[in-house]
Structure formats: structure tokens, C-alpha cells
Length: 218
Length: 196
Image (cartoon, rainbow over all chains, first blue to last red; front, side, top):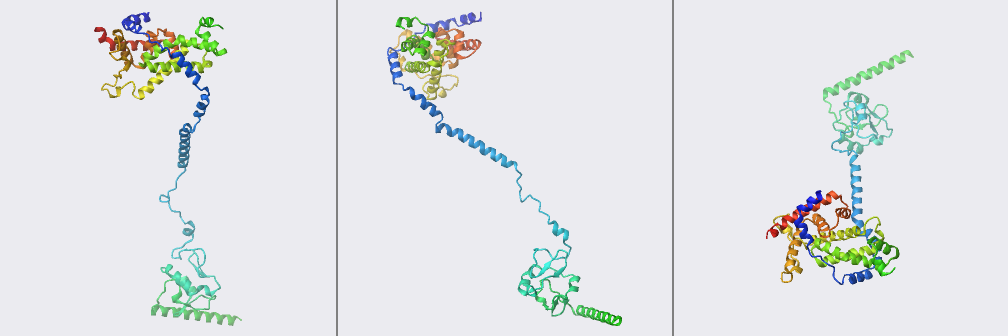
């Protein structure tokens, strides 16, 4: 029913279309067609197949694959945390903080310099038996670095401080020149010198007393 | 098989004969049966006679070359119309890209299609009936190709809705709808001519 309605609705236009002249093929159609078929090389199918895999066709696809691989690699690498050295918190030198005491020699290197081992305990001990290691040139170099160093009382007690130089107790008999020491030189005032003399005298007297008591006991 | 007996065969029997025995005569009979309807169909769709003849020749060559791909389940007419329709559409797109047909990109109204006049329809050559024919043809070419194809198959080639649906791989309902749309558009275009 719908078809008939449609046909009726467009009756006029349908009639016009049906009345159109029928277009025929030219007379030469068949001969031309057979000529084309005979001329047509049906082995062209092979090159068509080849052309499907030709370089020009493979280049875009391979480029796409390559791009995808690169993107995947970039995304994978970006997943790893990038440590920005500027945003990193500085590493705490736990060893130094733990062992160092206030007023101690800063630990610039682990190896003893010029026979002087700077221990983080703040004590300066002369371990080297070679006095040559304490020679002036080495100490001179280091003197700049340790300019701020202030020897504490313990060190003073251990060293034989004289007006001419410093000698380590027992181990070093060779006197040291003050100018060669790698710590800040202390210029003693007259009163300080007198006190030191007094202390020396006391030590001497104590030693004499010790010796006398020893002889008495014997 | 004699020529007479071959002439009596149906399209499907002829293509089968051509498939099995490569009987060139069977192919020639098929060409003679379909050359005119196909030229008419392609010409009404493209509007250029030389191009239409070329497209139909190409269709026949495809039938010759790919005879084995024909499936006996389908009607031969459906198969050959499908090939011709596809080639015609390809040619239409190719020519459209080259601006051989339409210059609507230069028109003020984008929906309107301006056709370049075909030299074969020069007024000094065509007759009165030819003038009407040309007007209808021009109007037909202004219809969207999707609807135009349907209208040609139905109202010019006089194929059934079912056949058109099979050729276009569409449902019958869609085919009817498209045909009516095409007709309506064509009627609108030809309204002024009818009044005259």
C-alpha cells in the first residue's frame, strides 16, 4: 500500500524519468572491449600484490610503529622518579655529627696529614714516629685551613709549650717552632708566662716530692 | 555448445558456462545483454557519455577477469550492477576531486550544485525532446548521489526494491526511503519546468 501511495505521489516525476531516452552503448563497444581484454596483461595481478607490500606503503606504517615504540619508551622512562639534586635534602654526615665534639678539629680527611691525626674526639695525638712528617712545609700548607683552631687546655697540657717552641711529651724530643704549628699561635702575656712558670715550678716540686717519697720508701 | 543454445541460456547459466569452460561466446552474450542498461545507468549517474562507456567497459573487464568470484547464490544482474555502481561512484569521486563535475565550492549556497555544461548538449545540436531530456538529466545530477543512484535504479532501470536492496546491501525500507527522498528533491528541482 505504501509503495502504491509513493508511486502515486511521485507519479509525474516517475513518468518523466521513465520517458527519458535510453542511452545505448556505441557500436564499437564490443570490439573495443575485446581489444582491451586481449591487450590487458593479466599478469598485472602480481605487481598489484607486490605493490601492497611496496616500500611506499610500508613507510607510513613502519613510521607509525616506530613512533608508538618511542612514545611507550618515553612514558616508561618517565615513570621512574627523577631525583632533582636541587630539591634533594642534603645527606647528613651522621658519622661526623655523632663523633665530633664542639671545639674539635674539623675532620677534613680521614688520612693523617703530616703525621697529625685529627680525631673527631677533639684530641690531637701525635702517632707518627717520623719527626720529618711534621716538617714545616706540610704544616705551612695546612696552617691556613686550621687558622681558627683554638687548642684547648688538654692539648696545652700535653705539649711542652715554651717560648721557643712546642714539644710533645715523651715522644718528641725535637723542639717545634711556634711558627710551624698549624694552629693559631697564642701570644702569652707576661702574667700568663709567670703563671706557666709557677705551674712548672709546682710540677717540678711535686715531682721532687714524688722522687723523695720513692727514695724514702726504698 | 552452439550459439543458439547459448542465447537461450539465462544470465546465471551463461556465467557458469564461462566460469567452467571459459566459453568466450557466453561472455559476449552477457556483454550484449548488459551493455546498454549499464551504459544508461552509469550515464544517468555521471552525466558524461564517454566516461560512462569507459566505466561500463571496465565493468565488463572485471567480469571477465574475476568471473570465478561470482557466487551462484546471487543474481547475475545484481552482481554486475554492483560492480558498475562501485566503479561509477569511484569515477564520480575522482572527477569531483578534480572539479570536473561540480563547482559548488565556488557557489554562494553550499547545498546547491552547479554543473559544468556538457559539450555534447550544445543547443544547436539537440532536439526539443533532447532539451527536456537534458533538463531532467541536469536536475538529476543536482540530486545527492546517494539518492540519485536509487532513483535511477528504480525509476529508469526499473529494478525491484528487493534487487536494489541487494545491490546496495541495504534494507528494503532504507531503499524506499532514499528513493522517495530523491524523488522529492527531483520534483522540487523540476517544479518550475512542469509549470511551464
